[in-house]
Length: 360
Image (tube, rainbow, N blue to C red; front, side, top):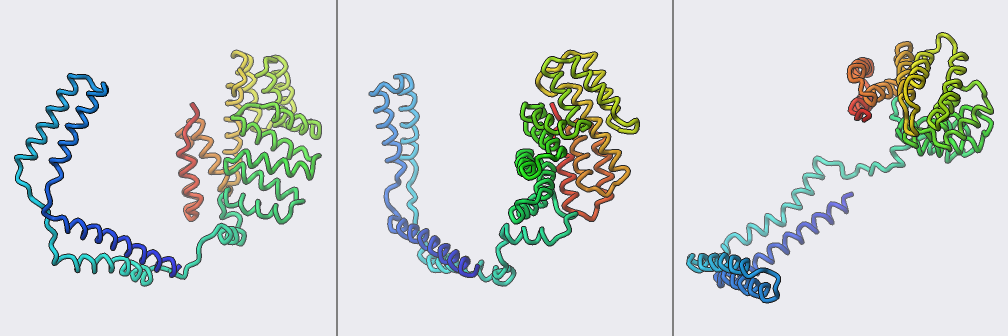
């Protein structure tokens, strides 16, 4: 670091010397003819040249010619005041120009930290790995888990948690990639196929893409009672035009849900919307929005029972912001800020989540 600052100081001094040398050369020409007159004469010649080549009309030529001539006459009438350099100031200016970089270097050595090592990603990663996981942000946790999966490429849970960290970091592509690695290691785990389907929906902007549908179908083969795959596959049927079939699948899912399951209300709203409204297009439909609101309500209920989940509060605030429910967003934000007042990173994440633009 010291070598860098010494080199920077020398380069600065050399640059100042070049500037002063150029100024000294200009001083040698002090008292020479004012270049303004030559400039306006050249303008007149260029106007005539453009007109002769047909690039400007004759009327424009006359106007431009008259303006340049007026400026030429005005400059010729003004008393020429040649620039003269004060030779007595040359040495002080040179000394100041040479001392400024040296003074800057001295100040850095005095108040700075020249021996402080560079904060490389490797050192930051080591710090994160030695920290309490609860204090890490989702991207930091993802970086730690990514390093762990490199060290333990056969650890299914490592890729599973890496996918969850990527999802919390708003990186559905990374989440899907991690889940595919996990599925290669454990192809018979229904929860991994279900998470992959959700990641592919997020990656596809909310649509149940063919890839997402295939993942959900694999999950259902392994766990026929899985709720999330059944819901999204029924939604895909409605979007594809099979309204009756999709609603029937939703009704069957509703019948299987426990009476205390908070998703029952959202599912009932989705069914009502699908029955009373037009068949949804391939874009996310109102039934999906009702289901999303139901899931957000479920998250809020979960946090009310266990408010220690900081990442959950960030997700809840962001969800309310996306849905445009500003009153609920502000209430959740105030509660989370009060509870996590001693966690600056989480407070920063909450502020960013609250600033999320609502859906249009």
